[in-house]
Image (spheres, rainbow, N blue to C red):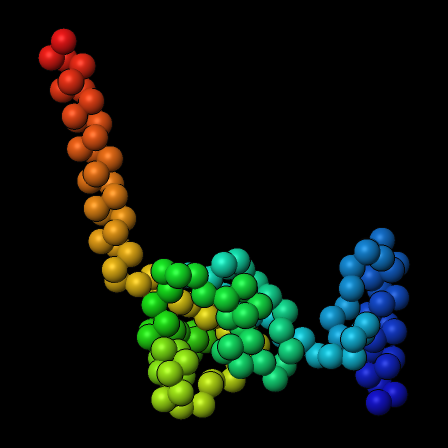
Length: 142
């Protein structure tokens, strides 16, 4: 306990001496140890987040604001340098899935886009092209 207190005091002193007094050392103010994770894909706010060390997949996704309506929750990936875990979050939400995987420091969570959304985007783009061609045709007929 005494060694960790000395390390924290040393870290705070180094930050303050460097002119970085506006920065915080995670865990010092809250007595909670945090780890960095990355959340990509169909979440409300993709990015890098600090979450508690005991965090699981749900905590990680929640830190990024939760999934969007376009999220494909049946194929969520947790990626590490040397491995990848796939998890079907739809099964969990239907109370049929296995235990939620815990996260390790440096984890990258990726939630892909639902397959239906690709078609929706393609149809929307095609509609806009048809409208533009129709306008040009109407303007040239005058």
